[in-house]
Length: 111
Image 1 (cartoon, rainbow, N blue to C red):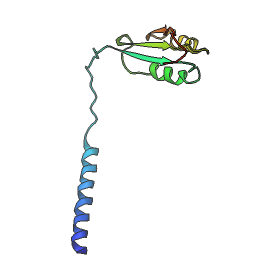
Image 2 (image 1 turned 90 degrees about the vertical axis):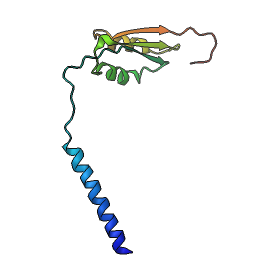
Image 3 (image 1 turned 30 degrees about the horizontal axis):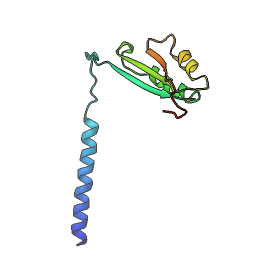
Image 4 (image 1 turned 180 degrees about the horizontal axis):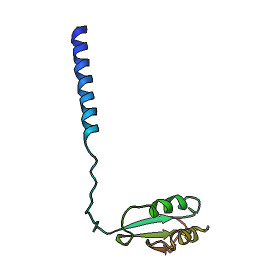
């Protein structure tokens, strides 16, 4: 019984090691002639997010995708802080297409 368990464990360890060695030998694929042609829009609702927006905007600016291929639409849900100014300050001067839309309130409930 113990011998069978040792054999099965040894086979398992050899199999896992062969997978690890095999995956390490695979070369990383890097496309050289690929031009993205998909356009998309990102909708971002916000309300009083002045403290959190800089991290989000920083990651949007760092995107490695052609800036003319996407747009960001920010939906302001009655923010009482400087969230809109934070967006304008961060994205002005970049080639990122963006717009800020104010969500009209019909009641006191949020999003």
